[in-house]
Image (cartoon, rainbow, N blue to C red; front, top):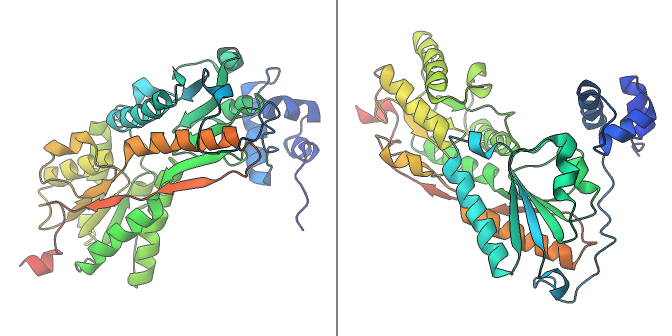
Length: 357
């Protein structure tokens, strides 16, 4: 049996005191940001797990799906870092927030959205007697989540999973959606593929890549992935388009041009459509392109983008359902809720070029 990873083991690994590890992993001040980052990285690498939250101030309720009267006047902190900076996903995240707000309102609960904050002052923001729980949306640092665990209040994460903090999570079923989408392209006859999107950007991107890659490995004998395309860092549309164009041009020069490109989300797919247009590569006659999210901005795309329909509001609504259940049954184990998505087949995909001649 694997031995439990202790704070002392982390301290020995990093070369700091156990006291410093304790401060870093409890979200306290008193250690530098560099040291804190090293400690958290070591904790993740060694497999350290924060003890499950002990909801000592909560009691088990008879009906786990109906909010108990004791919580009816409370409110929930919704944490979504850098909301103003999420240009590509503004519509996506606004829909998720709308779902959260709608579900809270139906349960008579208030909402406070925290987007910009100083990690050192975060505990002051959330210290109130009427706070009953937290919803985290998107990528949230381990440091902030460590602060949250100290409150003893329920935490539900949407589209994110922390490597050392165990809590309830809500995701789209990213793996299955892209697995089915890739299967569909293979059934159309495509043999030469590329995936575009930074697979380390988020848990969702990684799951989409795994769904895609699993389908490829099951059906195709040979496959070469452009490394730059799965480490794509650019958030700006023009810079991202230029990087994609550069790589696709290189693939084309090496006679390795894909006939189908599966993108990690719609924003990347729009850049890919533009890059192909700049290279005079016709979509879908010469190359099929797919996205993920079915966001508002793809309506103007030409050709119309094949994508995956994400139930954005439902992600928020179901997160509140999970939170209420945790309030009513505080000692239940953490769960991961997966929501299915539908393939939306449009004009950006077709049979491979040899079938169109």
